Length: 335
Ligand SMILES: *Cc1c(COP(=O)(O)O)cnc(C)c1O
Image (cartoon, rainbow, N blue to C red; front, side, top):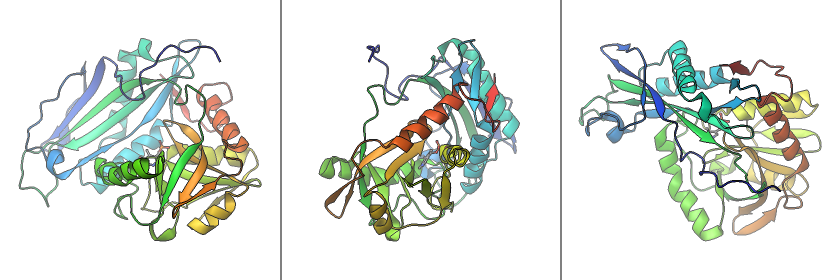
């Protein structure tokens, strides 16, 4: 391996500018591009007390010719609208969010890293109404901000098979909130994750409420065996990942059978005796699982290494994102 310069950790570096819009009196303001700086927010703001906040995360990729291509922004904007709706926050206008994202990219075109790096885009919407008595009332004022962060290969030192604690005791979120990308869900999952790190040296927790396999704190979960991909069917209890959808689509293109249904911990443990297990999400794309820890017992996933199908699916999606394979599904938008 060639030696890599030291890169900042994922998400720790922001570009110089952000896009901001505010909502009051029933409408969104025009958005503005501003230097990244502290926001004027009341300490009584609704989101600080009652967690009326949601976000999105997706990537844009630079090509050798200097053009920048955003991956599946339409799907991420739809999910942002869905999250805002579920939190009774003002609905963002899809065209406005798209314009804000493009404006941020234009403000920092030169900061978009070369492949395998990317520009990670992070829109947020949160309630700003200054009223500490609004515990059961929605925010009527809000702010929308789009941040951008240069990111490099998530696995700069090579893919490492993950250790995952299988948890059938805790839930990640309330059942109707799993599909909402909202801050409270991550805060709720933190204590079980920290506990799993301390007690089992686990990288992540796979939440399996009632024994049914769901997802980890910030990634979807899939199993692979004998030409079949298995993942939980969509319901309100977990986040509907765009990476999940993209990998299932590419998997079908490659001739795999895709099964979306509920499955329990025992079925999962049977699959991993010879199969593969992996986590999917925008940041890491697809990360192989080497060990599942359940009820105090370690279960090695096949050989314990990142599986061959996991590696090839991951490589395929990255190749589409970077323009090395044709964009057959119209996933990329050039800015
Ligand atoms: C963001 C997220 C994912 C992955 O979604 P992508 O659209 O693939 O990035 C999965 N689970 C949770 C809980 C998430 O927050």
